[in-house]
Length: 200
Image 1 (cartoon, rainbow, N blue to C red):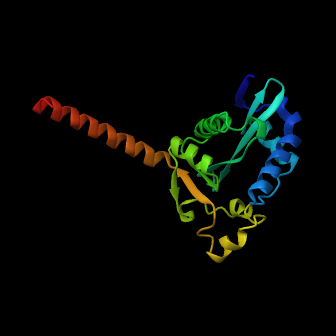
Image 2 (cartoon, rainbow, N blue to C red):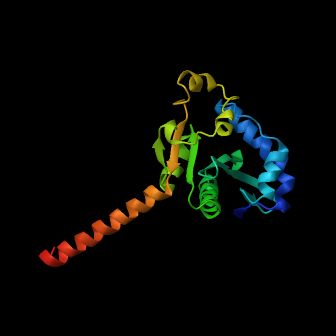
Image 3 (tube, rainbow, N blue to C red):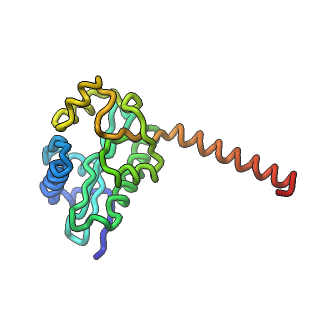
């Protein structure tokens, strides 16, 4: 078995229906009822270089695509799926990493965000530098939130005036991450100075 993870290209368009069926089945299994995308929508993500696919030779393994919102201020990784027989092999983590890298390359100044109920996805997001946040810190683009309307929990979102639901909001803010890195560097430099001065 050799699982390759890459940016999807037109040679992968033959997998579109299967990808959509897998996303749909996983949403139903989780009980979230996220709206099924059209095959054309998934195909467009592939054609525009905004999708990651995992394959085992000529067999579809997993998938994820990126969407930009709020005039490219926010980017979400959506539709993450790994076929059941390939779960537990670290494929989801590899796909998420590739989607993260693609998002940072295509939209270097955007805040990356997502909504999830899955513990495994939360763990992967945390490793990538995402942090849990209130929905107020996510995009206010109505097109994004319209995607929640088919979810069985949409009434919760409505009752809370779009401020919370059963999903956890997570965000990677490149500006915040850069500031933290600078602060860590400054602290390390200061610690080195103290060590040299006091011989510790």
